[in-house]
Image (cartoon, rainbow, N blue to C red; front, side, top):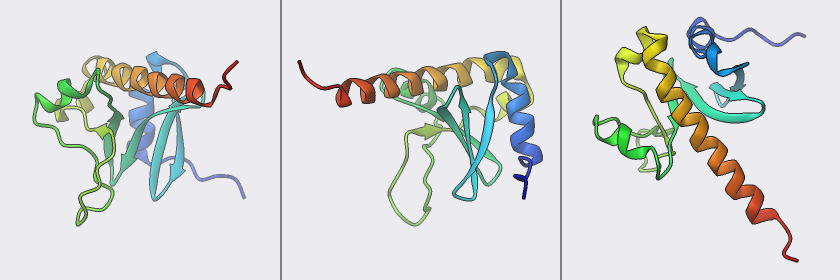
Length: 121
């Protein structure tokens, strides 16, 4: 059976981010993981977009009062993914800097993970 196409919201978000490269939406945990070249930098849950955050870009989300993604609303667990401002979902030019920031955070996380797993010589 061929995979189901992404939801209209996921397809729209991928299209808005197309200037960054080949953005792929992959089903995961009832939502989607968005990636470029195998690097996941965004999540979609309940038709809401969340972008990867780390110590270098988290403040830009927090300054706007944006809250991290909580997969279980009744539990305190929060992931390092934040929504962009609502207005960014209506304008690709506004969304792209936020998405690039999320992608850069995902690249930094992947680099840290690769260094951690590298054998010492």
